[in-house]
Image 1: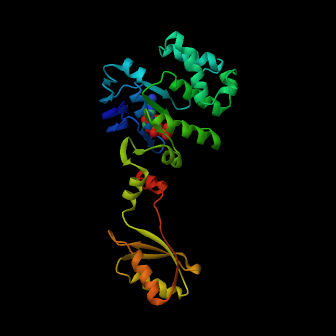
Image 2: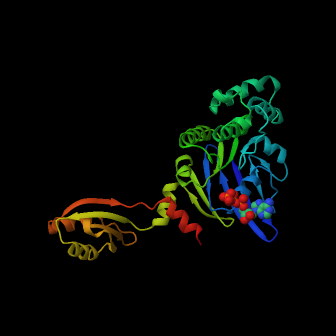
Image 3: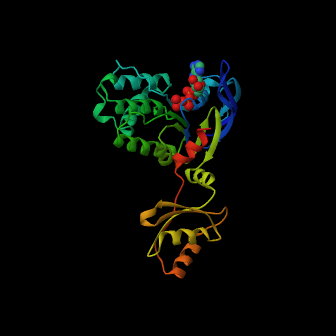
Amino acid sequence: MDIVVEQLTKTYGAQKAVDDISFKVKTGEVLGFLGPNGAGKTTTMKAITTFLIPTKGNIWVGKHSVLQEPEKVKKLIGYLPENNPLYHDLPLIDYLKFVARIQGIEKEKIKERILEMIRVCGLEGEKHKKIGELSKGYQQRTGLAQALIHDPAVLILDEPTSGLDPNQIVEIRELIKRIGKEKTVILSSHILAEVEATCDRIMIINKGKIVADGSAVELRKQAQGKEIIKTTIENGKTDEIFTALQEIGSVETVDFIERGKNIFEVQSKPEHTSRRDIFKLCVEKGWTLTELSPIETKLEDVFRHLTLK
Ligand code: ATP
């Protein structure tokens, strides 16, 4: 089921938490929201789930608008809110039963769905405990179970792995990936590696605006623009190599990564690659080329570049 966000704006007093953003998410797509604190991620997610009414704009979930048919939209969405609010005094099974009834699951099917969720979310060993007695990770799984219980077409997950240990993070990521094949998923996270590992598409939000949208590879490419190479050249004088690299026609700048070991950073001119020229230079001079590898822009650098403005 597609989600279409049209010119969404949400203001709190004079502040624009979300400022005229539009985007579309398709079935089978896992979209990751990245952004610094206060960027507008939660606000956007809340507007999609109908918990917030937009100040301007509209959102469509399938053919239903959050403005005209919020009840229908709610039924299509599973939502794991930030901080995962749960009833700590309820036993886990009773809680899932309660959510199943609220979601309007037929009485005869409730037991089956609860068992399915316990299996899918890995809660077997914990199912007889009260929610307050569960560790944070298992509470997070309970939050996911409640979001999934009515088998929604759309999943909105606000920081789904916050507070989990590294093993649980991997398991929950795998779970989200599996679920994401059939559903439309939007998740937010502060962990760049997580978004890169889980999401097909990344959207970076800053000050209520979309500042980047694409796959991790696309975002890196956009940010990089020019080829940057790390190269190690042996059996030659450092300064001589440095100067010769600078004189290559396709090279824009040369820097040292480690002077003592003859490791250089070479940036090519826009639209150029200097790998062949570096190789040829070494052959001509009789130097030994022991490393020639592209330096990829890290997603972290892309993020910092786009959100520190
Ligand atoms: P975080 O990563 O810290 O969770 P976020 O990207 O989810 O941040 P939002 O929670 O969407 O950010 O907040 C966006 C802006 O809107 C913030 O400046 C926040 O203070 C403001 N805001 C959010 N909710 C309210 C509210 N109920 N009343 C007033 N301002 C609010």
